[in-house]
Image (tube, rainbow, N blue to C red; front, side, top):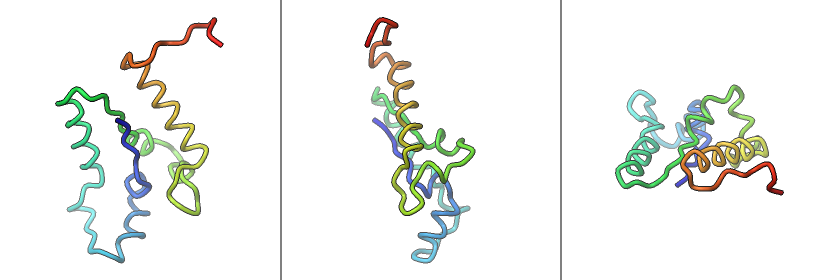
Length: 104
């Protein structure tokens, strides 16, 4: 499973600006990372390979550039980052064979 981070999870200020006017949002009481932690733990308990991109996206020095400025879909940079991490994860988990130098 691949856990795709919502922009507001990566940049909590964005989430608060977008949703804060619609609901009472107290960042001290609502943990934006909790759903991901729960899903990762569920995957471990059930032996389901689960890649959570939230920590990778949060660690990015320019997280807003992983998303389009006009909406919260991934930009080309975000897609490239997710693809690189997914490839690394699949190889590390032994879910796809490593490519040899002779492969096209």
